[in-house]
Structure formats: C-alpha cells, structure tokens
Image 1 (tube, chains in turn purple, brown, orange, yellow):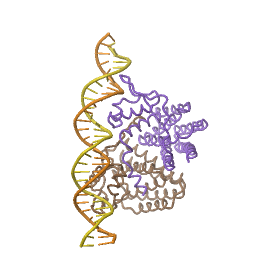
Image 2 (cartoon, each protein chain N blue to C red):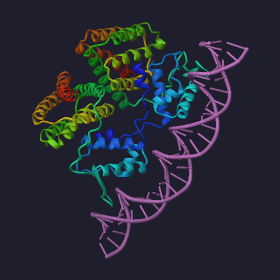
Image 3 (cartoon, rainbow over the protein chains, first blue to last red):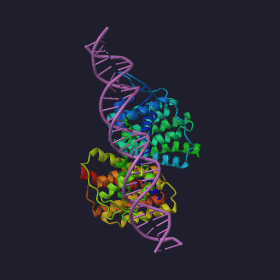
Image 4 (tube, each protein chain N blue to C red):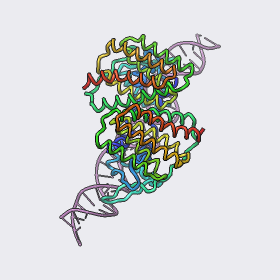
Length: 232
Length: 232
DNA sequence: GTCCAATGGCTCGCTGACATACCTTTGGAG
DNA sequence: CTCCAAAGGTATGTCAGCGAGCCATTGGAC
C-alpha cells in the first residue's frame, strides 16, 4: 500500500538543528539572500523559524564551518553570506527513483505556478520583480547562474500570490538543484535557458496561462533530459 | 520581502504530539484507512512516523477521546477506525487569504498530477485502482462522499509514481477539505462531480495529458467557485 | 569624547520527547 | 487445555531543545 507509505512517512525530517541548517542553506543556495547580504538578526530569525536561539546559533556555526557565512559582532553587525558561496559537496550516488520523483514534483508544481501566475492580474511590483530577475539571470556568470535561475523561478511562484505554492516550488528546486550540481553547466544550455525564460515571462505578463504553462513545461523538459542523460 | 517569509517560516508546524495527531487524522479523513479498518501496530507505526511509542500513544489517546478510533488488546487486537467517522469540528473564521492560498495550491498540484498520470504508461494494478476508486466514489453515500472523493484524487496522484507529489496532493486536500466541511454538500453537485471524475479518469487511462489536465482544472474550478461563493 | 542601542556570545535550569524494558490481555495453534 | 505470539498498557532514566537572562563588542549619534 504505497499510499500509506506516503501518509505514514516520518513527521520530522530530522532534529531541530538539522532542519534549521537545511532551511538556511536553502535560502542561500536559492539566492534569496545573496553573497554579501545579511541574514536577519539571530533573535528575530530564531522567532521566525520557531527554534530557540541556541539551536539557531548551532546551525549558523555549522554554516560558518562550511564557509557559507561570517558573523560580526556589534551594532550593524550580523551574519553575512560569503562571496563566493561554496560549492555544495555532491552527496551519495543518485537513486533513479529519487530522480524521477524530484523531476515529477518539479514539473507539476512549476508548470502549475506558471499557469496560475499568468492567470492573475499582476501588480506593478510583481511585474517589475519578474523583469528584474529575468535580466539578472541573463547577465549572470556561470558561477552564479544556478542561484539567479532559481531566483527567477521563485519570483514566478511568488507571482501566484500563494505562499504555500512558493514554498512547494522552493522545495522542489532544492531537490533538483542537488542533482544538477552533479552535472556540468554548459554555456549553450545556458543561452537556451535564457531564451525560454524570456518566453515564459512574456506569456505571464501578457496573461496567457496556457502558453505560459507550455513554455515552462518545455523549459523544464530540457533540464530533465540532461539530468536523465547524465545520471542514468 | 514575502519570499523570505516563505523560506524563514517555522521549521516545525507544532510539537511531535500535535504533528502525529495531524497525520493520523489525515489518514482517516482522507479515507486511506476506512471505517472498521485497522491502523498499523503501535510499534510499527511509531517507527514509520519517526516518533516514540509514548508520543504516538498520546496521539492515539486523543483520537479515542475525539471518537475517531477504538483500541483492543491481545493478539489480533489493534487500533480500529470507528464507523461512522466523527464530523470535524469547524474551526475559526476563514481567512480569505488562506482560502485563496489553499485553492491555488490545490489547483497547481492536482492539475499537475492529472497531467503527469496521463503521461505515464500505467500498470494494470494502477489502472484497476483508478477504476475501483471511481466506482466507489459514484456509489458513495453523502456521509462518506468526501472521503471517497479524496481517495480517488489520491489514486490519481499515486498513479504519477511520485511519492512527493502524492504527499503534496494529500496536504492540499486536507486544507481544502477543512474549508469544504463548512459548506453544504448537495446531491446535484455530487452528481456533477461524478461525471467529471469519469471524464478525468477516462483521459488518464487513455493517455491524453492535455485533456486530463483540462478536465481536472474544470472539476476543481467547480468546487472553488462554491467555496468562494459561500465563504466570501 | 561619551554614550548607547543593536548585535553576536554565553550559561543554567526546566521540560518534552525518546529509548528501553517490562507487564497484561487475548485468541488461535497444537 | 495449554501455550505463546502479537498486540496494547506502563514505568524510568537520559538528553536535546527551550526560555530567559546576562555579558562583550561595535560603530554611529550627540
């Protein structure tokens, strides 16, 4: 009964410390707090994450050891993201089922997000945000491309106005990024990606849900094919 | 910065006890373990859920108090789901933002699931499962309709072969069901739903992703309209 | 030059949750 | 009839994580 496997899965993915580390790494690797930028103050961040300051500090400490951040004391101090962001250590062998699962989830939530975003009346702020992320992505170097790319996709999710859907896209992206880190990032793929990004965003701001969805599906299929090719 | 709100959200939705209760209620209210059926043994379930047996037992105890289950000792004993399943206590006033969020998430993941399921080569078991759930849903009484309906939608998610997507659909459904429990369930809506279910499943087994998606979107739009009408 | 507000750094006692072990009940196998 | 395996019921010692408070450092405001 695989359905029961899905519902009776573990209620917690790890202990509080591990989950906190995971969340901070997510924010950094998805480019939500970029190199040189500051994380919220410990007291505030601990409250927002719903963990004690002690636990949060342990997590930050382990990010320091991994080279992700540096902390400075005093007023106008804080915890700052290092530049460059360290490359993620590729973990164990890729399980083919995990690959299929991650790609299926991403396809479902990201095409859904593109369609919903295109079906809404976007505010000026949201429209500008999309275009900003689009150009940032186009101008990004190889080193920072994955972060800028994620940032654009998150902006699309954000444009749906649904926090839950944004969260779902962020999770799906973290999982696929972990896989993408194991294969080379080539300039031709990158150029192709940027063209597709432009098409997607155009359809979203034009308010054409069907076209936005199709463009997003095509875009995702590209990297899915790469992944399956390299990892199978 | 709403994106940071999404990423720096609490790492745990509640304490271990609360999350365990939530998970068990989910399994029962979504009809994954039906009335009269038995939950896995405490020792096994505690392991699967990743909580201690003490915590699991506290959760089961509170389900007993709420009338969801009864426990029997001895070999061939266990914890059994009561018949009928108690009606859920409608909680506080509905926040319009929560409503929009839940509906957007559901639309995205469920249409994605329908499309992915239709795009796969289904095994005989999966196809039979879909058809079984479809007829169960058609023959369901008003009292049990919501559970059978959820069960069918979960079978569609399951047919994608992606555990993560199945989980996402289950979560989205729990949230919308909590809202649907606040509005009346009328026989005409029910009949209409069943017709749509048949169309969706037909397109999935026929392997037509585009049509399956469209049918699912239409189906979900129906209840979305009802919800917005009654709760806004 | 002095002050001070905001930040990271640290300590200690309390509680929830866990692992483990053992007890009690039940009903089929033999 | 007897036994015993599998299930729920209970007790206990340990530890991660929390809350709360205090200390140390820093750089701008005045």
